[in-house]
Length: 319
Length: 258
Image 1 (cartoon, each protein chain N blue to C red):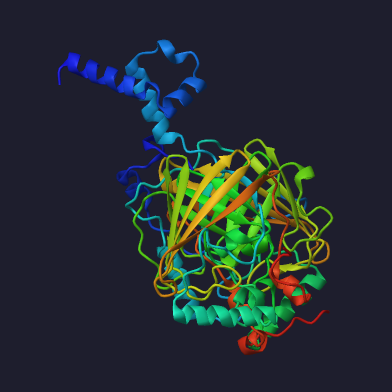
Image 2: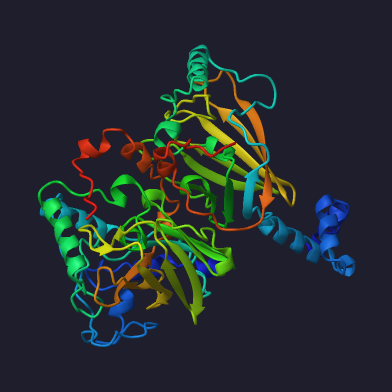
């Protein structure tokens, strides 16, 4: 992070930046700031036959079960109220557009189910995908939610990890970009030189990620997952053979510190569960006040012998 | 102060500094400087003092892996109660019954200073506001707040504590408190939630990092005690994904082999 007076916003600037937090489910700044109907910059455009571009609906409301709607609404309100404090000489992001270093937090309020793509078209689940999602939602509504990676403190895959509203840090050097997430003490390593891939030949939970620069957009291609993963709370599926493409860029739509965001366009190519590749957009706001990241010792809770039974979780059937 | 007095003061200061270690380093770094005025020298020295922290950035591995952190001098000064706990831990360790150690049984976060004893690598990301120690073992990390900002202590302690740092010359001094009493100093030695830890990191040479550790915990020890650990620089590289839970499920030791 840059330091020094030139990199610090004044209190007045910060005060100006502290407008009302957007309502839950509002489009991220990187999407909302474009002309109506325009695709996000850096995105190649919809695949043939896709619905016309648009802001796209927010993720659906409360998750299928488990959390009462009132509690979920209270949680959303709490998140919405959590903004960069007015006081404090917070640093700005680096002026280098290819330097993403610093602390960021999900701008949208926790997707329960990603039921549409970024153009508003229904998530293109195929028959197997629909069946699997329906089974997961039914088990949740029955009060017997399936075990998934997040419930047992295993790396969740990028989509769910990026949807969590706890902050993350980005560090980078010439060889790799390192995402460090507070939740699950998650780590996402993006190598810029495929020869530096630390998991070559392995299938990690987070897959193997290789990045390159397309202008000032970091394009990350990830494949080779250890197991299938959930895209959201309800369990919209992705298979171990899924291919993820993340297009990540730093956006400053305005002149204030709070106008900085990190825009991420995710494209999932997974014929096991979808009829075509599809994309969604998320954005992350600049939150230097969230540093340092707090400890997240989920192993302490979930590794107890009776955890699965006492928590009400049930193992997901294999088929 | 008059102009002539100011010039005299600058000149005197330059004379004092002429043979200082810092001045010698400056001259080595800027061989063309001898003809530069005293005022410019002073300005350069001031600039260097403000921004000349060494870079600890890179990938490191402990020089001599160890399960036990030996004091620099003498024995660990246990209080009577803590000694009993330590002896019990030793017996349990010898019989491979690790109920006293949630790292072994649960893959729980080891906390400090134990994390600094991991035989796996760690990476230091050194930035002005925060220094991040990222460990290969189980994807853990902790961050040292270098901002000097006042913060509220957490309502309850963390295994990893709260770390604040500052540079003293070429040495990074990290003070950590707000711990739990749920972790161990190494594989055996207990501590209370009142432990205060001071770690001073400095480069002994470009490829050797030393961590001098001071442990204060009146609940556990009759006096503060010190230990020292060295790390060797490794080829800079990202870490493979390490999942302690999977090792444990496979019947392997959660802790990496020593």
